Length: 193
Image (cartoon, rainbow, N blue to C red):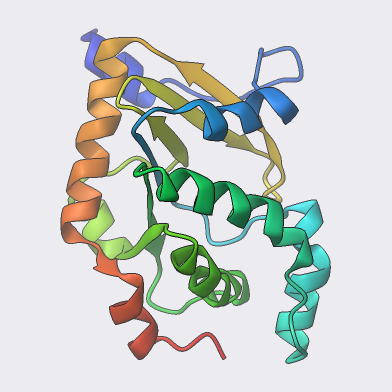
């Protein structure tokens, strides 16, 4: 069987002993990259513990408390202020879920902190044969494939440095960014509330 097929379609069922990077080691990836941190987001819902209260506030139509978000935004301001690029493409269905609308609400703060966030419709993602998994690519040589529970809780990241795998994921990111719409354009047609 060709290596490309093995790498692209190998089942990914993480376990507690799978050596996933978590906690401070995962956070260090965002402090230590030299030039670029780019992400592909493919899920329609995430269950991130520190977001739960503000997500509930958003869904209820209340003011959203973003104090929990400040450490991330501070890191983003520091990194983008140093001339580094932090960018992501969010693959979205025709009808946004409550969570995707919440993320769209948060994207205003992300972009103000220097992140480049773009949106790609699911049909285009499928036509580009993008993988249906989330990952970060740091400096075009360190791939962090994110592993989640079915409910959307982050288990950790599988770190991959194999050049063949990294290049394939970089190619997918390049295609996604080429076809995706910038946040400012997307939000005009899809207001979060």
